[in-house]
Image (cartoon, rainbow, N blue to C red):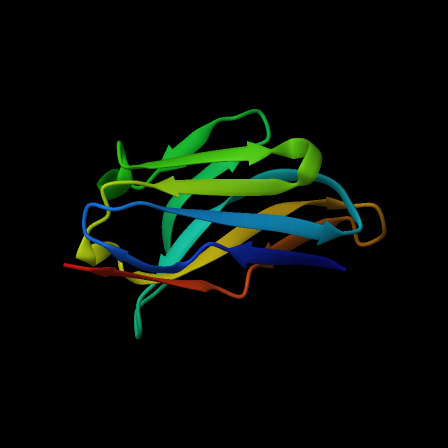
Length: 121
């Protein structure tokens, strides 16, 4: 089984910073894509940013220049540095990972439990 464990959410003031972390544990052979999505109550989950194992990234337009994703492949961990926070960044953030396991079935796709981020004005 593969599990994602998130940390780093909480309360911040507008203009402040928060760093989210997500570590993947389990029977992992490799992780192709890791990243972060966000979801507001009653709305669909939306992409924030993802990163491939070779470092290619895809940012949602509103976070470009403010958020930076990075990953440690050796530790199966992804980080999201969030600067210049705005009240509209308030949401539940979900870690995402997909890749291959060491056991059959090989392919996995997992979500973290979600971490709430609240930005006050």
